[in-house]
Image 1: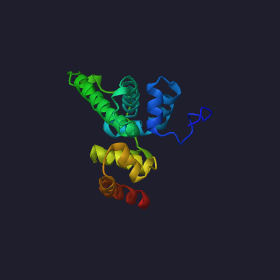
Image 2 (image 1 turned 120 degrees about the vertical axis):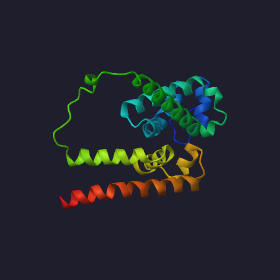
Image 3 (image 1 turned 90 degrees about the vertical axis):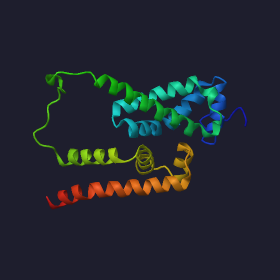
Image 4 (image 1 turned 60 degrees about the horizontal axis):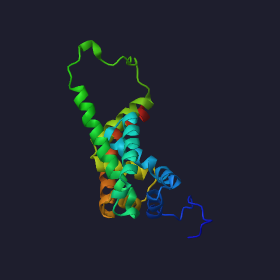
Length: 193
């Protein structure tokens, strides 16, 4: 590698960026963050199911990863290592939230947001989709969000989540089948209406 090559060169794999980040190159770590922020957010969202919580968990995971970069045993598999941290941080966040919610609140302390008189078709479909996603296993949610929303290939998901490629395909198949079953009725009702 020549010194005139720019670090943002896509030929630099995760291993090279991790090595450089370990040596103190902030640009290398920034590139890893840029490369994995969206996938980290989606993995966190698959666990927390809330936008704000997913953002918090993903950001917290990146901070932990930076502090523990020396613990990444296989720098070429940085993505899988990071996604493990994201999942753990997301679960920890959910545990903290559930502990806060176990306090007894008065009946009048419910959400201050008013409920709309009628729900638009889009919000109804969004709610149905969120409910259907919630019924998937965490791994199925991660796989379907990374594949169908982000456009990742099976091999990429397998590497990043540290799963066999066939397992990724299986999770994707069953996730899509479950989602299709939940959404068919809603879509049919909207077409008729």
